[in-house]
Image 1 (cartoon, helix red, strand yellow):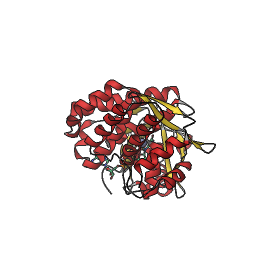
Image 2 (image 1 turned 60 degrees about the vertical axis):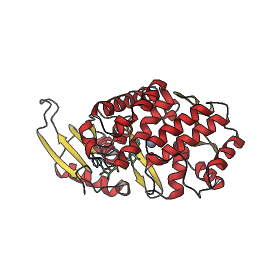
Image 3 (image 1 turned 120 degrees about the vertical axis):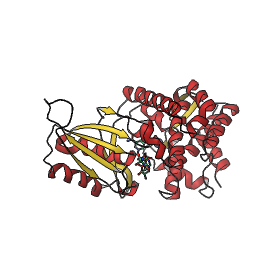
Image 4 (image 1 turned 45 degrees about the vertical axis):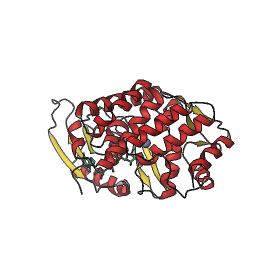
Length: 320
Ligand SMILES: NC(=O)c1ccc[n+]([C@@H]2O[C@H](COP(=O)([O-])OP(=O)(O)OC[C@H]3O[C@@H](n4cnc5c(N)ncnc54)[C@H](O)[C@@H]3O)[C@@H](O)[C@H]2O)c1
Ligand SMILES: [Zn+2]
């Protein structure tokens, strides 16, 4: 059990000053495999044992796993209590703590049980990133790069120039990357909280990425690593369907590679298996994958009808 894998809960009567009059703590075991009912029940147990009422605020202190569980506890405990996110991984700071998706895994599927519940406050402190393992930092960078690619060419260029500062964990550079990522994600979520439209743009690289994660069995590659390779594949497909040009494709591949992230899927999945895996993605509608493609760097769109031969050619080119 690590200090970062904890949910904190404070109880503050509505009319009292902002400081909590009482607080209790619930720690959860570390890791994606514990994002389940058992861990969620530990949070409910602590809340009930401490007679927490509807004036309770749940504070999630940890990475995305803790944020998702604590958020779902906040969405459901006594039909919903206040919720604050204090994300401690780069991925949680730039992605999972913003947007209000909360939930747990079911043995038959990741993130299958959940609710939308917005945090009242998200507090991202760059200091906590100092202890983050290198591989986790790089995985978080994949989502940062994604935000630039789908929405902001100037931010993408800034990443090309200042990536070294991020890898050295310079607080000012990290703060800029987190702030811009959160702004972009919040802008998109504000238009479409429930993902009936534009929120799907945030899934750029994810349909391919999820296929890699499932194909490998969860836990082998980190989510950000799979998304990194998935983004390069989606860019390649965009080139084949007449979106971005080869030079833009190469710029993305280079940035992903410089961030120490994979630029291609692991060998051995194979085009046919890829297609099969992609067809079970949550984003599939009426049998056809709904892919996010690029018009140019900084502008993505939802492609409902990707030509099957372009998809086949992309998969054949990258998968062994
Ligand atoms: N709700 C959403 O919108 C959303 C979006 C993206 C991802 N997610 C979810 O987020 C989860 C992944 O989040 P994650 O990448 O943060 O993984 P994580 O929560 O498992 O954290 C990764 C590892 O880093 C450790 N850690 C956390 N903070 C640390 C720190 N400051 N110093 C040292 N170690 C630290 C953790 O203990 C853990 O071992 C997945 O369950 C995914 O489904 C949710
Ligand atoms: Zn992601």
